[in-house]
Image (cartoon, rainbow, N blue to C red; front, top):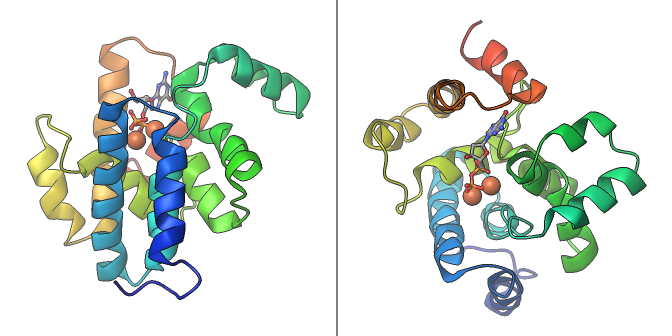
Length: 194
Ligand code: DGI
Ligand code: FE
Ligand code: FE
């Protein structure tokens, strides 16, 4: 593999094990699927394979944390209190990135941003942000109507698949009468409705 020398196979193994200990087998399998897809996309779009690997391995690191840990951090660390009206779906990336930096020592701002944005997307997204957002959606373990089209699109035009994913996720949330986080709407307005 064409990783930088600092990110040895050993470092990846250690990170993988730390992530594995924090989640169910099923979710860990998802994480490995996201990593595989993110690396493939990183090769295609010329993004650091090391950053793609680390961001993918850690994107759902905080997903199985109890709500009270998120609530504590939101109250303590100066987050907008409006965030308290949401739940794990929004917190695990946005606030979860703080757990990743504090507990795993990952300080790379590009990686942390990709983790923060992986659920909602954003208007402004780096290539790495887009790769993690999309890889999360199309990794081999995902199966839903449209996933095949999204997988094909991902290798043709990354922006197109960001739009596709954003539209379908929002549709799904609306059907279920879920509360929409403002950033999700910003993403929709920028990528779909512009
Ligand atoms: O963590 P994963 O399941 O791998 O995937 P994810 O982080 O993309 O999404 C987690 C959940 O968050 C998914 O069911 C969709 C949901 N979600 C995305 N945007 C919003 C949202 N849920 C609410 N309530 N509001 C949003 O704006
Ligand atoms: Fe997630
Ligand atoms: Fe995920």
